[in-house]
Structure formats: structure tokens, C-alpha cells
Image 1 (spheres, chains in turn purple, red):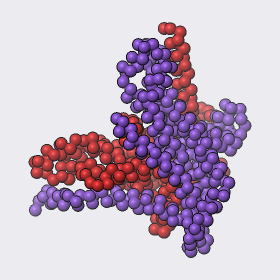
Image 2 (spheres, helix red, strand yellow):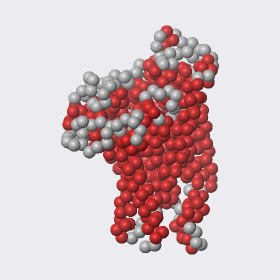
Image 3 (cartoon, rainbow over the protein chains, first blue to last red):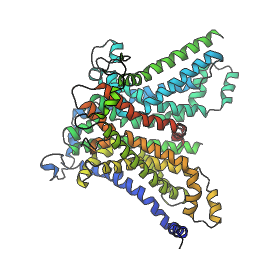
Image 4 (cartoon, helix red, strand yellow):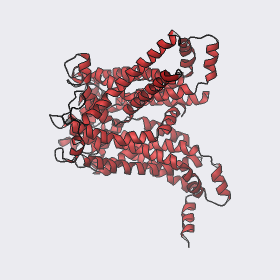
Length: 304
Length: 276
């Protein structure tokens, strides 16, 4: 028997219902390392499991005690409040507005001649830098921003503040760093959205005598509104879960973000069961956002 | 040129220069300090630039020379990218060439899993790995990172294979080829650039991952570069900025290269997030 026909027989064995077996490895992976951990988190949150001591080996179910402890912990509320502020200012205000402004400016027509060439060059440098800020590893971004906001760094020098900004103004510092980190995504999304607007609409608006501002608010914005909403939800989800950069810059500052709170409870205080309870509470919020996103996508597809 | 045009051009230039300064400054500091033997957070052009920071990455930090962490990252990211690409390829064949119940629900689940914050998984993974004996094991990190990357690569592979018309395969079927055979012989070669993109994006995903290896690995000899960098930074009172910056740049280069290689696809993928 030639090897060719052997391969053919092996291949044809995977026809029909058996073919679905090919889905199994991927699903098993996600099941074991994503779905099961999420379920395990729920189980864990009702126990007194600990990383050290007797309860690391002999743990038992203690009902909703962890949830009670979390919901009466003022640090949890401070973390939650700061996470919301962090998300609103760095993602919704910073990244969306800056990303949209960048996309609009980049899509503008350049004048003829040397001035146009310079404008084009500036645009190219700006896009590249925004892009690189987004793609370098998050640990590197955190390290660079810790240096920028250190007592001798560039930012305190420019602002004439003689202090470590990430200690004196931790929330503001991570907000600015996160705008730096994440704006590229909004920019790319809006660039694509702007490109999808047909040119003749602008031409018609120009013929009708619309000013650039009118064109922006009455033509551009309504046409890219669905992109703006999708961008809002996606970056809210991502910003909510940001851990690495703030962790590198602030260390285990539990009250600053819920991710830092969860990590601090689990690792610094050896209380993973409490951390699991905190994770579950916040995961519900994230899940609600994700489901909103999916619903929205379904609606967008029906509109098309 | 009218006055209003000049004013708007000046405004555009001012805006772009502001953007360049804001986004460029931290990156420029990284590059400058990596060539500065006496680097500090101070923003300056090195008075005596040298390559000493790069060369001394072979010298140990604590007990481990930093290049070990880069090797570990290469092992972890390569294995995880290969694993996820193969699994996504197999799954995408079924997802795009067969119709079955629960298919769209499955894709929706992938969308959900793709957006779950890694810390939600990292905490239980740490505890489960203690029970499964996967603590301090690179294999454990590879498995967990692959599972976290899979929803993303599955969706990409699904979209990619859907964009290749099935009519080529149907022609092969008429010529007596089996369905999987036609897929492997006709569609797979056509999809090669797409698979390369998937592999590269899966690679950078695991390359830069931080929280999972942070929670799973504490042995300095098994750390990937991301955790090594943090260890390097956080472990000692005096921060060695020059070597840290040099290490950061070496660690970032693969990401930058991959993203510029896949730029076109990335732009399409981002715009795809609005419609898919």
C-alpha cells in the first residue's frame, strides 16, 4: 500500500460526524484553562482556602462570608471608585477623544507642495509613535512611564513638581500613562470608520455651504456613531481589566484599582478565596459589558 | 493661500507636534538611556554613548543572566503560537466547512472569552496549578497562555477561512478528493499567509503576557522576559536603568517587527471588530 492511499484513508476517516472531533482539542483547551478556572473561582469564593497555613490543606465551605467581608471593606470601594474614574478619564475621555482627533486630522487633505510634504511627514511620525506605544510589551511601557514620572524624570521637571508623580498623584499618573498606551486602538478604529464614509457625502455638504465644523458634527459624527459606541464598550472592557502597567508603576496599591485589589488580596495577604469573591463581583460587571457589546454587534449587522 | 487655511495648517502642525512629543518622549528616553552607561530617569542625550548596557546583559542579575529570560520567552511564545495555530486550523476547518447546531453560539462564546480580563483566569489558574503540579513549570505557562490566546486565533482563523471561497474545494471534491483532503490540498496553501499572521499574533500575545507567568512562575531560571524585567526592576533598591532599558528594547523589538509585518491585517481586524 502506498503512503499516499494510507494518508487518503486516514483523511477520509475524518469525514462526516467524526470530523467534529477536530473541534475537540481547541474546545478542551478552552474548557480546562478558561471555563473551568472561572467556575473554580466561584467555588473558591465560598471557601476559606488560604495560600499558607492549615487552610491551604484543610479548607472548608464558609458560605457567603467572603462576600460579606469584601462588601464591608472600604478598600474595595475605594478600588472600585478609582477603577471607574480610571476608566472614564483614561479610556472614555482620553482615548476616544484623542483617537478621534488623530483620525480626523490624519484623514484631512494636505495642501500642495512643500507644506503638504511636511504635513505628511508629521502625520507619518505621529502615527508610528502612537502605534509603537501600543505594541511594545506592557511591562516595558510601565517601566518607561515609571521613569518618566520619577522625581528626576521629564514630567515632574516640566510641571515643576519635586516629587514622584506616581506616589503623589497615582491615579492621574496611571490615567495619563494609559491614554498614552491605548489611544492607538481608537485611532485605528476611527481611521477605518472614516474611510468607509463615501466622499460624495462631503462634496454634497460642501456644495450646500456647510462649514468644516458643521460637516464634522452633522455628517462625520452621525456616520461613525456605531464605531464610536463599539469603541466605547471595547475599551471600557479592556481598561476595566488593566493590571500590568499600573502594577509596575504603583506596586501592590490595593485601593487604586480592582485588579490591584484582587492581586493584593491573593498574593500579598494570602487570601485567594477573598480575592476570588472580589473577582466574581467585578467579573459580573465586565460580563454585562461584554454581553452589551455582543448584542450591539448583532444589531449593527442587522442594520447593514 | 487664504488666511483661514494657514491658520488651520498651523493648528494641525501644533496638534501633530504635541502628539509626537507626548507619545515620543517615553520611547525616546528608553532608547537614549539604553546607550547611557550612567542612565537615570533624567531625560538627556548620553554624554558618552556606549553599547555597554547591551553587552552586560550576559552578566547575571542576582543569579540569572537576563538573556536566559529572553530564551525562555522564545520557548514559551513559539510553543504556544504553534499549538494555538494548529488547534485553530483544525477547528476552523469544521467551523467553516460544516454546519451544525450551536455553531453560532460557539462563536459568540469565543467572542466572550476573548474579552475576559486575564486576571480573572490568572488567580484560579494559580491555585489549580498548585493542585496539578504545574506551578513553576514553563509547560503550565504555555498551556494557560495558549488557552487564553485560542478564542482570539479561532475567530481569526474562522474569519480567514470563510473569506476563501469553498468553490475551489468543491471542484476538488468532484474530482474525487475527500472533504478534508480538499481542504488540506486546496485551501490550506491559499491560507498560508493568513496562518502566518495568526501564528505571529499568537506569538506576540504570549511573548508579552505578564500576569499568568507572574502568578505561575517564581523560579528565576524559568521566568519569561516580561516577569524577568519586573524582577530586574523591582528586586533591588537601586534601579539599573541603563541595562533595564537595553533589555526592554531587545524585548520589544520582536513585537515591533511583527506588528509592522502584520500591519495591514491588523487594520482590517480592528475595523472588523465593528461588524463581527
